[in-house]
Image 1 (cartoon, rainbow, N blue to C red):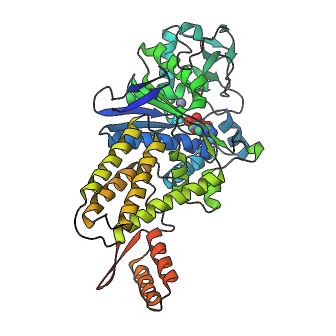
Image 2: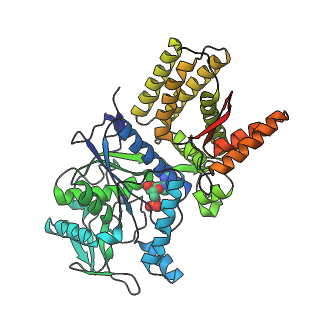
Image 3: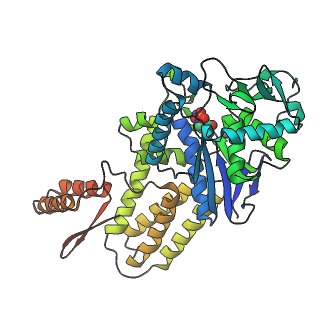
Length: 466
Ligand code: AMP
Ligand code: ZN
């Protein structure tokens, strides 16, 4: 089976390859940098990280763009309340975003761009729309007239019967019920941040930034555009209208949307007291890799119901895989290769790849790995797993970890020093001598958590870093 994704635009699973046969040009609607990233946001961004890694695994190069929304109504209000410029206010949260996403091991997209750095590009796109007679001016603001784009609604698959010209919406807030003419450029308001441009003094509406930046860095037709499902309407519908009404070309070939994360079956919200940022979970003592594991484990098109039991189960599952890796690395197996094990590893790779090729079915991919772990653990117990089988098993784990990236523990405060490793090894030897195996096992585990693998040999204990 070849790689295929579900495309919101066509409502079908379709084979995927980049249009130039080499580099995938993809765009992600990034965070609004007005607060710390929450686990719902992270679910979307983690699914896009899995997508990135899988595309690369399949041999494609990546040119991935992510924007930072650093000007909108909420930002302006919050910055005013904090007595800061929008630049100072958003800078704090942009930095925090990259710190947090690095903790859950999200690769940084090739290009990260801020809305406020692209005002001229937005102005020029709005001018093209003006030129194509798709806009009108009202009280100094420029609106997109959606009746000029008959395909409006094609992404959300909605026929907006009641589209009335002149029904306008000029806030950045979502309006899921009605299609309305949306604002491209907002006239300056007293006390608000503004730019002097050929369109007049003001600031951009929210939607225009993504069309302008996506086309600047990726060309008029992208391979993939991603975001959470809440963005399908109106944001992505508006992005399509802005881009296609200006260029006459399809804006993106694939639209990939991540379902929402819920908490204990409910929408996450501050008022319900079930709202968690990544920082909240780390403060409770959870490892960032466990959060990553949990977020990645549910296929992106299914709702993810976050619970603390689920997070604990993720910790356990991750530990099982790490213990398995430790067993592989440190056990002494009898010499030789068991062809049955070679075959077993090959089947696991096939299943793992088929699952991810099938619209990134991460649950099935994990299933393939765990079945392999179970079968080979049994074979190790019965002596059927041989020293020559280790390489294939490690290769499978490496493939797994190139996508899921959870096997190496996060080292708090930097790597442990060689001297400290040697001291712990000496302590472990002493513990063993006095038959305190609990302590010696603890030390082995402690070192493993810091990325140090021990190997007991006749000459003593050797160690290496992972
Ligand atoms: P924002 O910072 O609000 O612009 O959102 C950043 C990304 O997070 C967007 O792709 C949203 O669709 C996504 N998102 C927001 N809430 C959730 C949620 N509860 N579950 C999954 N994705 C979400
Ligand atoms: Zn966007």
